[in-house]
Image 1 (cartoon, one colour):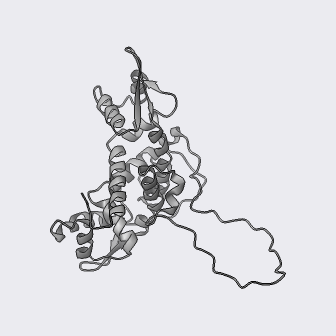
Image 2: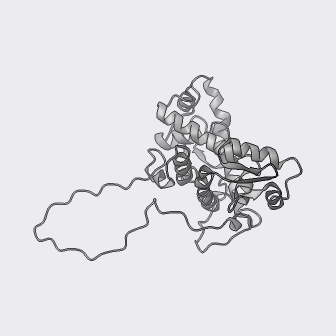
Image 3: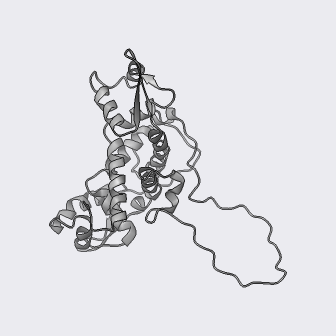
Length: 279
């Protein structure tokens, strides 16, 4: 059944990304996935890596990750059981450093340097607000939309005023901008900056390689076709130049240990304006 008044393909895309976020947002899920990076682990070995979890908390979370298809339970013998990533789980991991990059550029400055894992968890909290993904999708594709029109698209079967609580929350979170009551809504710079993250999640949830994220019809950045130039006989050949970095570049190299402790980067950070996205 449709969840929005958008075209079926777009509606399914939003539903898949919402489901993907729901897999990893619950508390400790990302940390468990990172702890499983490497060879499969026995339950006791994994428990030692996530020792902050109390007795009885790890097992249901592992089961949920197995049910989601991100973790695989392998029973070698009755007394030898290991847990490790599935292929789908491995394919999802490169999205995490994209989230860290977005958080460093757009989330408000914390009072202390935050480990990258906390940057991820703070970002996921913003993205999993109710109706957030659908609202961001519409604003990205339509540029500016009134609250009433947005409600007809995002929640067509409900009273249109129900769109305002999630909209106000997204404005407070710094992902959406408006000039005031009765004025249209648009993505903020931080909301627009989510393009690599949401494009990658869309590609992953559709079973495509993350390299396809740049071709997403809403969040992608396809290269513009060069304007045709007049044909010139015996045109001189220009000297080779360095090509600019494209949006399809792979994300910077990272290590799992970087996500558990604050890691400095050589990349200069953008100045974060006051009133930006909250944590």
